Image 1 (cartoon, one colour):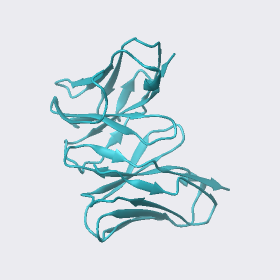
Image 2 (image 1 turned 180 degrees about the vertical axis):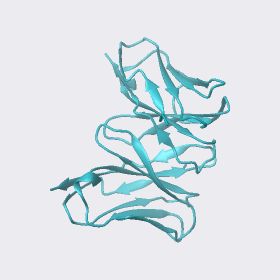
Image 3 (image 1 turned 30 degrees about the horizontal axis):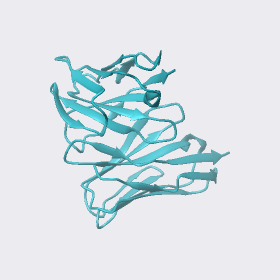
Image 4 (image 1 turned 90 degrees about the vertical axis):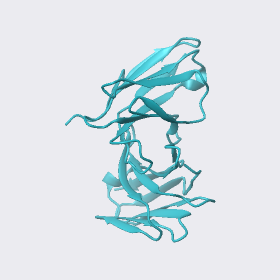
Length: 114
Length: 110
């Protein structure tokens, strides 16, 4: 069975641009979460979506937005990119949106802002 | 989830030595999950602990949840080079937010 897939794997953008990252969860998983991981730190929670509804949001500015589609895939959008947005963006899926669900992570999208 | 502090930040051991990482919170945790991230890889779920005083074992790995549910630990017996990576404890909250600790980077000298 395929795991969580993310695209693209790498991306280079310049300040002020906008970016869209994509994630396909494990088949049967209905919840998708997004995390930002900067080098040397643990992943930071951005969003969780379950059944197309936003279930949780971390401490990120409104420049960050996401959505979940009927097939449970998800997109993360970041507007007006800043140098500090350079990071590994991880998507994780779980069966439901419950708080004790194990998270299955994809390989991530490495975003570099010039 | 609530903030969690992990110690140590780094640990270097000789292959065959034991390793322990600790996770602490100032408030009661509803649950704890542990993840391992290999260099260049993504976090991989290891275990979740929910009950006070819970102890779970996976081969050479032993996970504990404190009686007061404010601390947790991961102990690896007789480390191997395949144990190299960063180990994260993660607290889960009622708002579906998972909070990762900063992790403990384990390196193993063969």
